[in-house]
Image 1 (cartoon, helix red, strand yellow):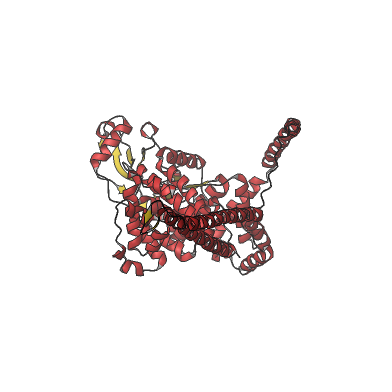
Image 2: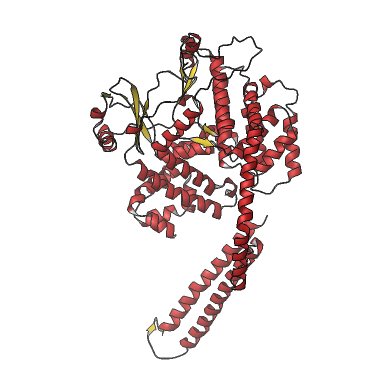
Length: 594
């Protein structure tokens, strides 16, 4: 209740009333009541219309949740997009519904945009740029994009954060944090959805997305990883001509234009609330008809896209986590441009090694290798390893003898994660992001080329990564790092041991053993003692009040001694509290039983 008293401050009150009204309209009124939001709002004079739930409440649950998220605004749209990455938590129909969430909103008034741009650029936009279009090129929930031109004739886009959006998002994040806490502590059936972990991941991701400078730094790092990149060069046996070099390079241009294009960032005008980048003149990823009209080769585009994303994931460890058609453009020479790096994924070197082993195990039909990796990942729950390993082996064995071209790695990964979900095991957030990105990539690749051999395209990159991982120089580097860590540990050991002994001699050495069943038992004993104390006090008040009722004199009420009646009233309230406390404790114990 302390939270609700704090959050009912004026800055959040209107927003919470709006959220509660939307939830009621979509048939989630019971949730509003259970959270205590209804009572808190009505005590402040905010009226909730409980009869608004109509046809919308008759939709399927996943459709109602998606539409409610859309109506609640940018924070919740972004939350749905994060939930769409958690294939380890939600069934496919929920993931498909969350994936429909579109990041679009009406444009902000240009007067507000102009005022904020003037603050961030140090001058009015018409003074900084030779030309600036006040009509936005695109609008999203967090930002909108305007087109402009520099003095040297370069066409650029100016991405502006919506004025006032941070305050709205921070209020929503406070509410979501408390909601996740209530769900995990108050509902055992929803606890396995790991609401607090999702909100922490979401908060970190959303705050990073609000910082356009951080987004541009990620874009530049990815761009640096594609310097001198020549694309997939392995020979093929399907009769496709060798056109992996760009058209410009074949024409004799040196150096050749890059195959993967990342917009250049103009740092002199880029900061937290605004970024300026090159304008990409190309065919949007959704316009496949235009791809055909301009003579671009769908097969080459699909293979280059797959190879580029696999390289980002398994070789670089920094990847575009949302490679959907809206973030992709096709350029002359069968080149590909990537934009919008607000959502990026990062994988450590160790994680990439595990990932390579997993993908190779799927492609090369090695179920034991796949099972070992998944068991290493799913370390946050109790599981029968023999049963899980048997299910994974049966899953991989069903693809034995299937040609590489027919393997759909994205669906295989999704099904594998479904097996983990069936055992209530969960992937770490970075891996959940990878799985979602890979599934999106495969769907987009097969739209370009229904015969795309994604496993065949990924295999050479995976083998190159394995070779690089076990190269003598890489092994020596890891060995040197391990030796340095061991040497540091040994060097620090005498000092650490001396401190330990000194603490023990002073009698200040504490050893903490945290045994959960005993902790629960202690809490039960403490609660029982409290109720016993209240019961004794209630009994004493009843006895004392009875004695007072027999004594004449003193103030009276309805002809009876006033203090005797007051004692009985106190005893009644205490007894009611005692019965409620016992009932609630019994209910909690039943929920905790397996």
